[in-house]
Image 1 (cartoon, rainbow, N blue to C red):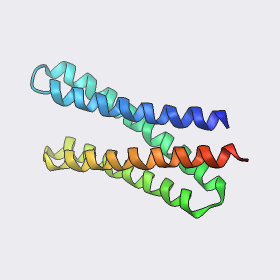
Image 2 (image 1 turned 60 degrees about the vertical axis):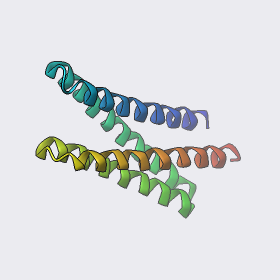
Image 3 (image 1 turned 180 degrees about the vertical axis):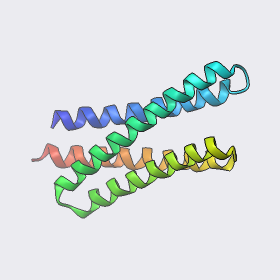
Image 4 (image 1 turned 90 degrees about the vertical axis):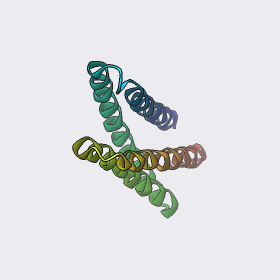
Length: 127
């Protein structure tokens, strides 16, 4: 139980770090290209870790045997995928509206991850 709680909180911290690196990269984008590129690489690494923890939370949600956490976990994976698609598409095409797709995907993922962490914590605590 403590392991689930620890990994879930770690997942939320990783999401905030990925968001922070993305924000810092956007702020430094006009100042220094070399710093911006290294921050972008860190942002992509932490976004990948976020996807890994999203898969882990989805697996935990499936272990409950209930539909509600499965749907939240699946929605979380979809929103992480949308955020990743928006970010990578922006890098390939340079269309600014794709950054909004990435941001909204991240925001939905953060909300669904928080909901799933709370639900799993309450569910696993009473087992």
